[in-house]
Image (cartoon, rainbow over the protein chains, first blue to last red):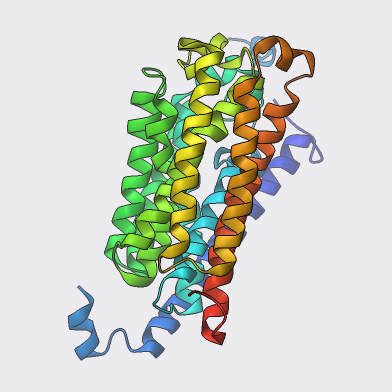
Length: 53
Length: 312
């Protein structure tokens, strides 16, 4: 079973792959942003870290 | 098996990114995002914008994941009901197993990430919400009792509590009242929908109130729950999240909502059918506005508070 390159299924796969790539890239940005926010806020300073849990 | 036989088999359509997104019930997710955001901003503790953004996102993902698990379990009745026939599973775009794997993975991911981004209480509340929606409502109550929507409505009412927990790390009277507002709003909202989505639930064998107890009983229930809802909604004005803006909004909206419920209660089926369920449809439309504006008023009170304008 072969498809030409411009078959509709290729477009759908491309859309899905681009979507997943964007989601993963966004996740990295969010985790980085969270880390910066928590570190600059001092959540992980020894005296605050003990109060966290 | 020859190539020809492979080609003639009915293959499931390959899902696109949008089909997976549709599994998350985006419209329900928008309500979850809004009410959770209000809960977060109404709390008396400020949250770092990045933490707030990430938390709301993970709450949305968790809410969406529970939607995917709901579609996995309810694929059989979704295929019967007109309103849900175009969902990704009955449409043949995504298999039930894929939806299950997608829902479980996102559920775990959302709860863990929320606990890490905000706090453990928020993460556990989100996990309980998903459990309640999928196991208690979808698997247990929905096909068993006409009270399904009354008890199951709790699942949709948790997001403002989760938002509040993100900020405060706990639960309080105000957050429970925000929960109660959505909880009490759900039954009249859904029963109004049931009255004009006539045969769908009956065809699917879901024991909604109008199927088991008739339309007269449903109209009575809408009125009783609307009156109880009004007490909760107006009473909230005198708590920490209320204020003059909220009180005015609540008085106006609850007057309209009660008037709508009385109008539905006074009608019988012949009259309703004759005008194409006009009153029931407008009551349902008003119910959407009702919840949005109540939470909008809470948000406004919280936003104006730093300028000495919100609250009492």
